[in-house]
Length: 331
Ligand SMILES: Nc1ncnc2c1ncn2[C@@H]1O[C@H](COP(=O)(O)OP(=O)(O)O)[C@@H](O)[C@H]1O
Ligand SMILES: N[C@@H](CCOP(=O)(O)O)C(=O)O
Image 1 (tube, helix red, strand yellow):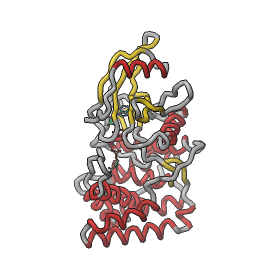
Image 2 (cartoon, rainbow, N blue to C red):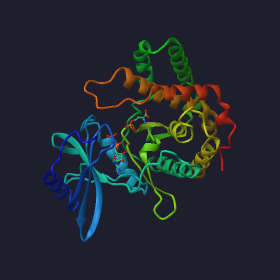
Image 3 (spheres, protein in one colour):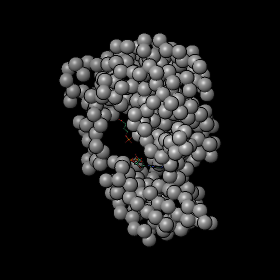
Image 4 (cartoon, rainbow, N blue to C red):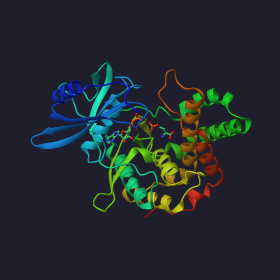
């Protein structure tokens, strides 16, 4: 269930009228999701039907949200398939509703693909590269709040909860990542706003016409400014691996990288650091999963994901760095 705050049809109708999105015709609480209250709502305007998602944010505050919503608006205006937020009369994309921060965004068609093929990987590779380029002139800035500084703060907090072998791997990997981040190659990496959590469950596809269409990317609530290569590594570690073992899948990996590079060719510093950032991306999610698992926030609604998965992915990346090196990276 993911309706923590009940909204009546009258309340939704009044909000949609205020936002000039038409007359409410249908409304349904969204059963998926664990963090926010989401309602799917439909409206009629000028004889046409429009589908939206009304989100009431249960964790993030009104002050934290504009960066994410404005980034989505910026990308949507540049043709990137993302949910487009609607502004109220004051131009705000996030507003207070039922004593919670709230937003109304366009609903994406289709569904997530949890067993992606090389074709899905190519589609998301293309979209990721376009998204990076489209966000270059986004005027707001916020660091990746789950970046190196957070790993340095959080590893000591989770260490007492893990076994000695895990502690040794966490500490040695963190030392390695601090070393990488201090290098001149790392300083040369191109940077900009990144999604930073573009897993399989945050992308929609539609196969309606017998042809694969990526209909959109959502859940921008870990976005921040960081290296584009880190975003790419987060994706490769999710879309292009075997989920049971954490081993990488060469065909999907190639397909993703070729499609990405066809839009934005990787620079030499990026090719050199890909194996290191694949490790960084695995470490990032291992730490956050350990943190969610052992130190759940008070009254947290989050269901922790399995930390052991990213421990396996990191081990694979440390043991087989050549998996990334040995592949062609240019089309
Ligand atoms: N703009 C959107 N268009 C279509 N479906 C959406 C959209 N936003 C959210 N959803 C659906 O709602 C579900 C929960 O959204 P999500 O952002 O993952 O919620 P939570 O942050 O609460 O986990 C998603 O799995 C997806 O099915
Ligand atoms: N993708 C992350 C979890 C992020 O949570 P989300 O439900 O907001 O996508 C992970 O797999 O650890």
